[in-house]
Image (tube, rainbow, N blue to C red; front, side):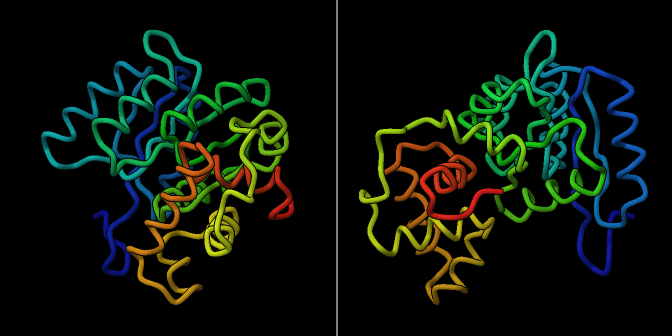
Length: 223
């Protein structure tokens, strides 16, 4: 169990205060061969408790699907805590269109991407796979809204070297560090360093923010 063609399934943990949402996502993932649900929680506090148990068993999930609006501990605070305690765990935020500012906060807390709650099932799976590969996942509808109010508007692309601009465009296209390394014929470590430098120069907290910034600045076409 948990194996697919010799490779391990992507392990997902669901966090949402609506039982019907968790049940629906679990039912969907159950029919996929490459993704399995490792566990679930009804709020951020319960999620941290469950993840602590899984960590003790050395069985952490690869990706957490995180509702942003929950009682006790909301998704933003829970995302920040998860990324501080378990940096290897990726978080994908689940949001409604009206919660764009919360998405900003989630990205700053370390979320790898976000989805609208009414996204099609195959898009949810695509976001999980992208996060697992270290890629950026932008929901086009939310991206358009977010790019209007993105942080660090005082920074411009002129702060970047030509190579860093290349790196930024590749990040915005959803490329992982390995993809970038292959495209530019450099080592993966060098690609990682370039990405880190780009984020530092632009004052951004994540690859997802960098992708949104590149769209807003016209370096890549918007969705």
